Structures are given as C-alpha cells and as structure tokens.
Length: 125
Image 1: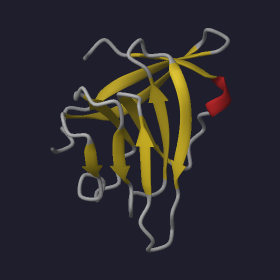
Image 2 (image 1 turned 60 degrees about the horizontal axis):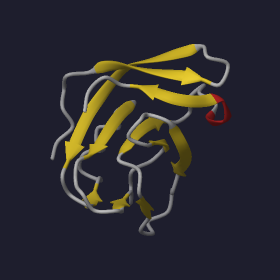
Image 3 (image 1 turned 90 degrees about the vertical axis):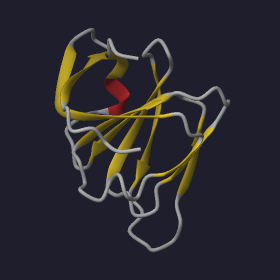
C-alpha cells in the first residue's frame, strides 16, 4: 500500500450548500482492515483520501507518529459522519477504529471547520 502520486482536488459541500475545494489530495486505497500508516505518512502529505475496500465492519488504524492530522469520516454516499484528530506528540501508540470506508486526512493547522462539513463530493470509488 502506497500513497499514489496522482494528486487531485477534493470538493466538500458545507452545511450552507457552498463548496470548498482542497487541492493536491493524494489517493490511498487498500483492502486491509488493519492499517499501520506510519510509513505512508513519513513525508507528511497535506491531504490524503483513504478508501477502504474490504467487507469487514470495522477498520483499525494505527496512527502512531502520524501527526498532526484531522481525520474526516464519510459514509458510502459521501455524507459526513464525524471527525477525530491525530495530534499525539508522545511516543505512546495511538489506534483508532472506524466503520467508515472513506477517510480524508487533513494536515493541521487548516482553515476547515468540522462543524460546517456536510458532504464529500468524490466521483471515484
């Protein structure tokens, strides 16, 4: 699994129906249900769109040393389902579990307000 170098623009619809474009998002897709993302994030990309392509209910993400990121979770229809942060500055392990199959990693700091996000407009599977 590697972050692809074919960067693209991601568009988010906000609650007021306006849109925000986030440029240079790097796609990452996998069929694994346990992901150690430390190697994929060594270069600290600004945006990564992770697509999980397995049939398991949950995915476990090992985010140890994957900092500083805000993770935005979306369902299959692209509806925003929630957010979490990977800001762990300690050496302790940091794991998250999610049922969402699309996750947008946004490097912090960023101007995006979590409370205003409604939908991810993504045409690719």
